Length: 131
Image (cartoon, rainbow, N blue to C red; front, side, top):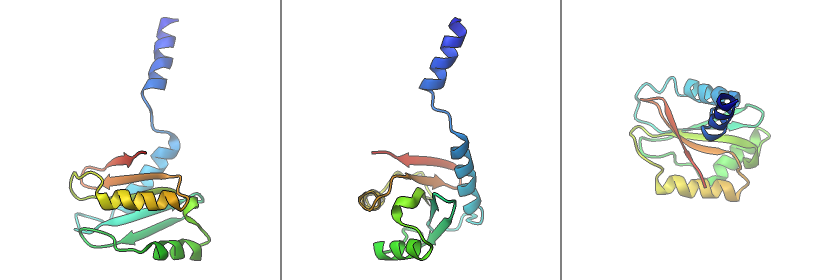
């Protein structure tokens, strides 16, 4: 009985990625598979119906206006509230930049309720920005 209680406690204390998380992470890794060390930043948004939106920029940033993002989503029948995952890469082991945080706040103001993450392609690791 003690082993069962310990196992249940471990399951609730140590968060395990869900099948959805695993699917989304593999999807993101696939989206970045052609990155191959190129010095560019890529942002991938995944909508609640599985539609993928990919934006790219320079080594330092992705220069998109909020209007361009809204227009791209609307053209494909989506709004920001439909986005369940927004991921962009950092080439180095950098944390979220002030611009990343500003963009995240803008997304939230416009209805975003999904996950906002950095993907580190060289080590295939993720980091999530949480409120």
